[in-house]
Length: 591
Ligand SMILES: [Zn+2]
Image (cartoon, rainbow, N blue to C red; front, side, top):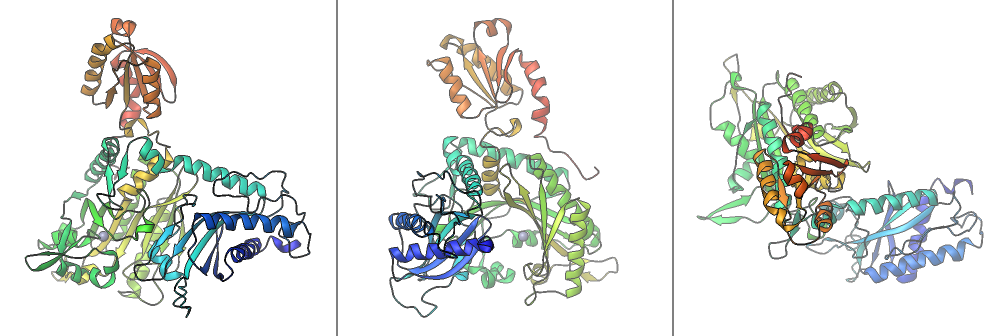
C-alpha cells in the first residue's frame, strides 16, 4: 500500500482500460501519458460518442465500488475502499465527492477526442468534453499518436480514441482542481465573448475566421493603438504589407518546402500562383532589400500588425485561441553582429513594458537552443546567439529555463510566458534569431570595411497573435477590463426619459474629453438600465436626474469603488486621469 502514490496515475489508467473494455471488448490501450493534472490514454477502438463516454465514466464508478470495497491487497486504488470520488465525474457533472479519505488518489474522466488515422484526419473534441483546450495542435497529435492502421491493424472501424482524466493524490486536490476548472469555465473567453458581444464565428463566413463586433473591435483598436504608438515611440518603423504573395517568394523563403502543410491552396492570377501569407517575414525582407544598405542604416526595425492565414484542422479550432486567420504584432530587426546584443535586450525590455501595461507581472523566459541534428549556420554563431539571449533574460531580471536542443533549425529563441489571474502559464512574446532567411534572400549591407556583409535577423512578436491575446485579456480580467481598455468607459443613465436631454449633454461633453460613453435613455426602470450596464461590466455608471441636471453634475457609481457621489465632468476626469493615462504609450529606451 505504500507506493500506490508513486504510480497512481498509471494505476488509475489501468482502471480506465478496464472500464473501456467493459464497454467495448476489442478496445486496446495503446498509449498512456501523464499530464500535469492527470493523464490521457489512447485506445484503438471504434469511435466513441458522448453516450459511450458517459457509460465508460459509469463503468469507472462501478469498478471503484466493486473492487475497492474488497480491500484486495495491491489491487485496490483506495486503501480504505471508502467513497473515493474516482470516476465521480459524470458528463452532466451531477455527482459530488463526499466523505472521502484524504489520502486516496482520486480521478475523474474529463473529455475525449478522436485522433483519426484516415486521410484528412482530424481531432474532434467530444461533445461531452469539459471544454478543456486541446493541449497540442491536431497536426502534432496526429503525428505523435500511433495510428492503428500504421501499427498493422487494418480493421476499418478502428480509430485512435483519446480519453483525458484528471487525477490527483487526494480527493481534496481533485476538488480544488474541479473548482479551478469551474472558475476557468466562467472566465472562458468564448462564453464571455458572446455575453459581452465581443466576437462571433459564422458558418457562412467559414471556420476559424473571426468576426469582431463593435465592442470587440474597440478592444482590438485600443490594443493596437497602444501597441502601435509604443512601437513608433521606441524606434520601430511601421509598415503595411499585402495578404498574398507569389509562389516564387514562398519558394525563396522555403515556406513551400517546409511549411506547405499549414498553407492554403494557391490562388491563380494571370497564370501565376499566389499564396495567402502564413508569415510576414518575406515581405519585411523585401522592403529591406528595396534599398542598398550600409552599416550606418542599421539597425532597421520594421513592425506591422500582419494578418496571416494558417491551416488548422477543423476539430482543433477554438474560439480566438486557435483560428485560421489571425493577426500578429510582428516585427523584424535587421542589424550588425555588434548591435544584436543591445537590440535583443531592448526588444525584451520593450516586450515586458507592453505586457505590463496590459496588467501582467509574472513572467518566465524559456530559451531554446541548437537542435542536435538538423540546423543551419555555424555552431559558433548559435553559441554566441544563445549566450546573448541568456544575458538578455538575466539583464531583464527574468527567471529563465533552457530547452536544450529545442530551437527551430534556423536559430535559437526566447519564448516569454506569463502567468494570468488564474495562475496559468500563457505563451506570448517571442524573440527569435534567424540564420536562414537573410542568406536565402541575399540580404546584405556595406560594412565599415567596404565589403558586403549579411545582416543578422531577429523575428519578434509580443502579443503573439492579437486574437489569442484578446482571449487572454478577456479571461484574465473576466471581461471587466481596466478603465483605459474598456470598450465603453461610461454608461449614462437618465433617471427618467425627460432627463435624456441632459444625459445627451453629459455624453457629448465626455466624448469631447476623449472618453467612450453610451447612454440608455429608454423608458424602462432606472434600476434595469443600471443593471444592463453592470452586466456589460462598464467601469463607471453615471446617473443623471433633476438634482444632477440642476448642479451640472452626475452621480457616479464605480464598478470597483461603489457609490462615489456627485461630481462635475472636470472632477470626474481629474479623478480618472491616472487610470486613463495607463493607456498612453511612452518611450522607455532611456529608462
Ligand atoms: Zn518573422
